[in-house]
Image (cartoon, rainbow, N blue to C red):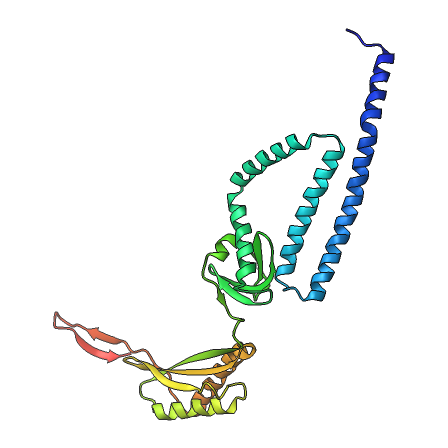
Length: 282
């Protein structure tokens, strides 16, 4: 059956009357809702700052709030358009189940993020090592943790594996032990070397008196002796003290004629079918 122009106009008019107002209201709700979500995010962030909420927790809570508000807004807009909510919720539940099965790894990362923020094995600003990577924690998101390495590389670590692996946190304790290993020739006077190292330790104000420094022989080989110097310092002084002590020890050894180990190799010579004999030590 062919429709005439008047019938078509009547259908369009009826459709506009029936759905036009609902569409306009839905658009209005969407615009106002977007503005309200932005304002609420700023307000919640301001409240968390005033209340002193942990810096690691703030981005996580903000993300959860943002997702929840957007889901609520979309539901309101769809309801305003006249969609049956019972059917919509059923479809949404089925879609959620399918998406959940497809994104099992992401859900594992989400659970890992919740676990990290609950147990708090590390916080924003801590230096950690995990899964062969090391860096300063810059951000803990819902699904991953962002690290910044010492050479300014950014590492994104999934929260799922991170929550279930061994994490070394270098920022928990206020002090650290520095262990310096010096390998010298067996011909040196150990007492003299220990005295030189003790003098270096005494002169550096960064080294703590308690726990007391320890200078001991940790290895004795054919041509060398390894002396370990174990000292304690504040966490922030670790690397500067490590580098300075190595440099100062080298200068002290050179000034006091402390010999370093020289590898020796025995050379065997054989002439006219005779038995090999040691010719020289190189």
